[in-house]
Amino acid sequence: MTTQNNTRASVAEPGLEELREQLWRAAIDCDETHAIALVRHAVGPDTSPQVRAAAERTLLELIAPVQERVGVQWAANTITVAQEHAATAINERCISAVADVAASAPVPAHAATEPLGRVTVACVDGEWHALPARLVTEVLRLRGWHVDYLGAQVPTEHLIAHLHQRKAEAVLLSSSIPSHLPTAHTAISACQAAGVPVVAGGAAFGPGGRYARRMQAAWAPDAVGAHTLLTRGLDRPTADAARLPDLDLPHLNDQEYTLVRQSKRQLVKQTLTDVEDAFPPMRAYSAYQRERTAEDIDHIVTYLATAVYVDDAELFTTFVGWTAGILQARGVPPRSLLPALDSLRHQLKDFPRAGHILTAARDALTVPGPGQPA
Image 1 (tube, one colour):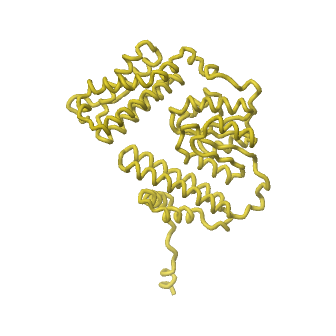
Image 2: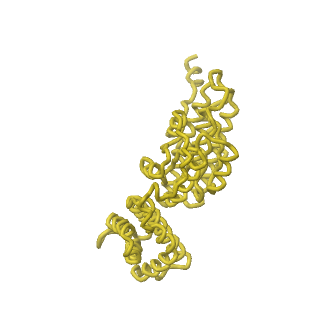
Image 3: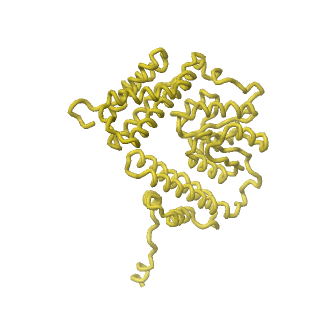
């Protein structure tokens, strides 16, 4: 009998770390079937009284960390762009699978019969990283909110039109890319002018949501934080909420941001020429490599303009450091950024705030010295 009992002993369930590794492997291998089976197993049967809590844990502690790993591994050049896109698509499908299980579960007897309220979740116009917003959406639904999820890249005028059609207690505005901050600022002001408070979220809004607060929006670091803010209640904007950006950011009156943005094409063109003169290896680049270099310079100018917009050198120095790491992982020496920064400093010598930001980035950029690996 003892032997038989030992034989019948159940196999230990995999721990969270093991599940993450399995989901990571399934996502990278484009094995959607296995990935969905994993997350459904993690949630458990829809008859379980703990299914909603299990669904939230699966979203936040299993799928979210795996998606974060996708971004890290892409930056390190250990997975391809195609793998990054496929893995993201599979993780989005996994979120849907978790939501499907939770939606099929019976509503607990103690749960409220009516939603806690209606909110709208949308990504800033131009922001195509929609997965964080989708995670927030599903967590809020699990916690009892009615959510209008509008998805990626929502033009501000269409967001406002939606708010006029379907009243919301708040708009949750998501952005991962800091270069979208000026657009986000416009959207925040427009929503508030329509009488709807805004909760901003995502890496674009800076450490601790510093840029969200400068733009007069509430800030939530994650889905649980958003639920907490909404539960406490947000003040409705007053009738004078409509405002120009310089009321929040008075430094914009110097017009540096506007002039940098307007001269972007010429700045990129001249910088590309100067980099080729100062960085001889570029002269042997293929047409494809030159196009990618032009794109990198375009991103540099865009982020510089954004840093001027929020008047924060750290935004630009962080981006330049990140870009140096991206280039180095792909065999391009970080020192190739120096002539680009120098060219922009020369072209913008009459712009004190832009010049200060460029100098700070150049000083912060770590470039190997002579005899060290590039």
